[in-house]
Length: 258
Image (cartoon, rainbow, N blue to C red):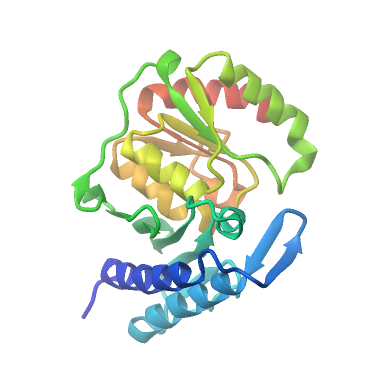
């Protein structure tokens, strides 16, 4: 019998083919909420991921962005984002991906993030390390003053915009650079890869961050919510970074956003 990570990889590959087929020719775009879009590519990608999972694990629970997924039985739960970075995808910006996180008895145990245009597949299993295209990942060892930090704007939490901007300014003045790529899953994956030294964002959904969080942990990094606890899937507020950067970044985030 196939393992969950094998199924996640196959599902991500099938979904990536769908996204590549649609990329550059998106015609129908629906507005779910302000600054929150869905395309036919999102829907088709999600359908094929769910179909692939349920072919092997029909009783597992699936939490998916567009359909809501399926309530199953037992201890397994899948977090599916069929297209993270939809706005990028619509505009032809290649920073988008498929993200699949796997949870067992309340603990993240598997992760796959597939970036089809960039030709990068990130994989992690609990206790087995994190990899990109077969190469082992390690978080960075740079000082906080030399760090390149990623973030995302609080489109789902605009009431916190002033506090967020204060936090942004504080981080900006203490590090060497800040980036906003438009895909939380890829920001987390690149933090695991050591490209970014850390990442913070608020008001996210569990399918945005489940896979990326495990990648960072398995690459030697630290992940928490804004209170320094492991409630980020429920709160949607996340800080993920190398150990040294995490301590400094969390201090600033807590100063402004708790």
